[in-house]
Image (tube, rainbow over all chains, first blue to last red; front, side, top):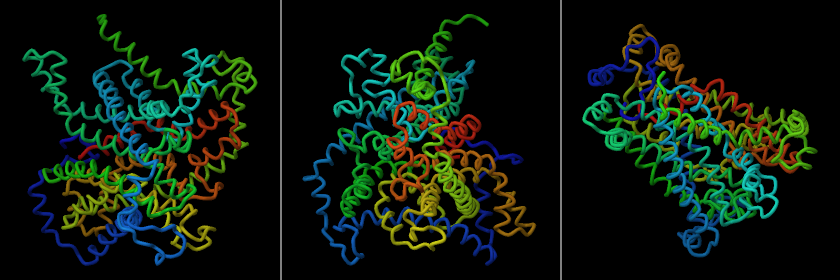
Length: 322
Length: 285
């Protein structure tokens, strides 16, 4: 129970017992053959479904990324081309580097703006406050909307002549800014909408983390003469370290998955290209180049592994400690 | 109560932030309640001449929204039940017994939960195209373009998160309980179904709320794996409906809010479960 708050105790139980004697006893438990079979099925069937539909395709992406295949004909028509797809993507594919750059901007934006806003709001709301729950509800609300819907709703704000933003700025009738059509600014306009939805989630994670900070620590700091600022940066923030890792992982994965919002706005073109769009274009788009799409997917996977592995290490270090 | 200027300032700041957060939704609501006549004459940034629910009823009937709600329902409900059932079985196995491969299994599910969908979507599309299903299950006769396929990928993909949450939760249930049941002669399945699962009700409720929202909100899986517009769940269908049926902003706004409605209702009614689920998902209990 190192990270964030512990789950509520199930009703009618007395809480976890100390782990060491339990572990010994567990090993001593011999299972009847029938129980072994049932347990095998209980673990085996879900694992099979998960492996067959998640890990086999993920592995398939890696293998197919070394091939050239248009999907017509059987597997025997697959031509193996080594790393040619990767070479072509990096050197000759005009959409790759813009998409890559947009993904980097996407990640940096989400890591900075919603994280700071979410942390600030969490700190402000982590106290006995009248209407505190009401504020929290309002700030959480965008989280339940799909990113596709966020795209639809924000289009009503960003439209050049009819949108809210230009009307408020007073430019709607004179010189309307085309927020979503201008490739120099549309990525940032979309990021504001995505950040709008993401901030509530970050706030939630930090609020849960702050609740687990021992109030005695803060009291002790106050007694030692620390001001609120010092208490936060020297006492509270270090305790939030596991939450920071979760925030990083959640944000990076959300950033790499982002697709719906740009797809409903303009199918991810004209300044809104993302790696996820390039992958999807090879399935539902005009061309069906499976090897090519898979190579793009593997690049996405490699970036994702940059946070998946640290997260696994974190989870299982805690696993060993408990 | 003593007068504290700091507190007043805090409240003013929070009220303004909340209003700014709600503004996009309120703006959509406002546009949806106005007539096309009104907004085309006065623009959207103006005082409404009258407010009406006409756009909602037009969007509802013209685009045949009930049909798409039904499409979503027949995917979401089975997926929800199956993912909770399968994940709780795995969580039960890995948290109540110690096998050599427990950690590997848990790691597999946890990592699977973090993969971006695009990493698996290309081979998955091929796999679905090659997997035959009986004609009575899907007229496409393969998993592609079938609602069964959509249910399966939701179950497989979401089980990563659910296994992680449930196994952490089950670890907090004392071993003495299943031990006692075992001594009384209960088999493994009865320990799971009658002892452990009932104790997991809070976690299952939280996960059900969260998973309902996520599966309902899915856009990519349906976009890629369903090819007949008629079979699309509502979130993905909105893309096609715009332009065909939702021609003006008022109708787009009304249609969007109608699509958002079920998740908004869930949020307002089950907010505690929703928040609890997300909190559990980020913790190591």
